[in-house]
Image 1 (tube, helix red, strand yellow):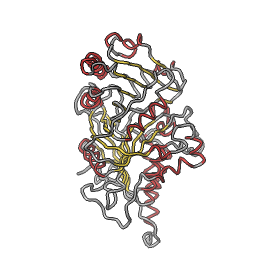
Image 2: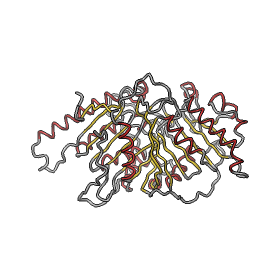
Image 3: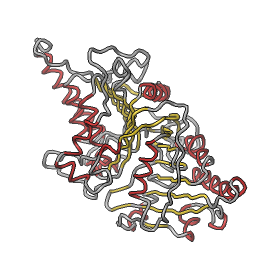
Image 4: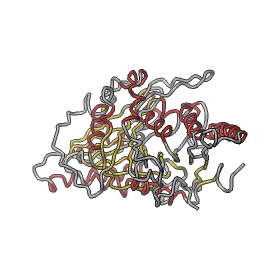
Length: 477
């Protein structure tokens, strides 16, 4: 049985409507509302949100543990760098991954002048947000962050001694804003030509993760985002250099970069109705996709506690859209309670209660179809089945205690021309923290072949790893 019943991606559906694009400029309407302008006016996309839209040539999508992705995909990409490496992660805590990380930096330094005589040092910028509770507690709340002097690289960060990195122009910066605002994005830019967006941190957890590699104009958009937030205030000026036109053999497709700035105060209103989410590009796009989907939306998310998203899911179901949700049980419960005041399991229970009411009301009306009202969409909820918790080795292959993938798939095979098949990947969870407080970054890609590849690889990993909690053939009650 296929776990991800998004759509039959082998057979493109025939619909009466003509070609449509879910990534058309209509999604920016929420950014141009009064609240949207207030939220976004100070950012580089504030006056012209359409600059976030571009094209991309996806080079590949991979899955595995974080350690596997670093060894097989991320660190090998470092070796291809000729001028510059920009590395951004949220958590910096993994001893084994750090050893591999340090080894590749030593190799790049040692071989720099042999591989590129007269080219100067390889520019490397390492950026992260969280290293330990103590580091966050005493971290400056200035958005300029903290630049680590070379004297702290080895003892504080686990990097090689500065004297061994003579071939690198290396700087390290961290940004964290109390009380909850972590900078959650994870991405790597190589020579401003290629970008990787993994779901994993540089941390030790044995979780299911994913990584997508991109080339094309979307990489320039990603560099602009990095430079606007990280590349100033003490980070040495990054000089411009000509980026050669892309030579990817992969076809280009529409893509949108989706930043979501951090917010220092979480807007808790426990005795009142939930506040609307900040109309950031990422939040706005996800709500737009839910409201404009034609058949189905699939969520694979570590947690699900965002009230605006849960309300939008119910609205989509009422409009006849089928929704599939796969998430985790008991993942980072203390963090959920601290940042959301609830947990995923309770939010799922409330979602199912509202859905049953919705279905009951629909069944009571015998003339639903004649009245022109859509039938209620099908809801499926599953929990990821992790491997035994005795496996704590971050280098263990194919063992996943939890799923840390953040993926949204919309409308599977698209319309008859293949338009409308969208995947959103990145750092954003479907929880309250990602929607209200932490900085996030996503990318939306519209291409049925990319959606098909993502779907197949995730389906392979999730086969026999999902407990069908609601809506599956063997429904748990």
